[in-house]
Length: 298
Image (cartoon, rainbow, N blue to C red):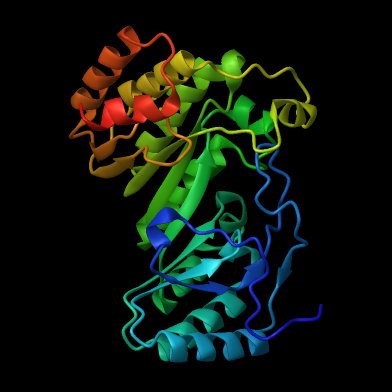
């Protein structure tokens, strides 16, 4: 592959919380790239950059942003690279940014599950501390339908191990991913999976169809009927109802969300349920922007 010096291969994605971070694009695209709901890296061919290219890029980035406190590693999954390469890259970054406080990355339980506990511990000690993981669902039928490439139990085992090693987890569930058919089991089993993991941060997003519903249906092996606005809210309520989290920061403030919720679980659980009950009881069809405003001021 021909690599250009400090050339970001578009598109580049990052979590909202990494808006002020320097992005070091370690890999290109997603090694798996088969999830039927995801179009993020559909235009890219997966590759791992050479360490020589990374050295040049990190050196220049450090010169441009010497006060940087946070670095985010792109693209789709840092654990797609081998352990020695990841450790070497982390050491390079720590040497290059003297004010560094945090290194984070997207990660999948599928690829992370191929690492031993000893390898993960070495990566943690090298400086990687926060992992953004798209769990999507805790239900095996939904995971199979969207070709996530991992089971709920595999996700539980891998992510519990990651937490035990000391990684902080920011995880994502996709509201509506199971459609009408799997809505109830998607909500309940996702909550049960989260209860096992006890992540530090939980984000709830709503499935969207950037290329249209027909395109999404064409990628599935069965009929998919998306939830209505009201059904999406009811699924969200069911998920929160079954959550038993000790100290998790909860957010539903992505552009895809109908409601803006920010708080702690289970600390704010009853408040969230009360607000959802009020909105569900009074919702026929409110445009998404108005619904977000209504929830924000409750």
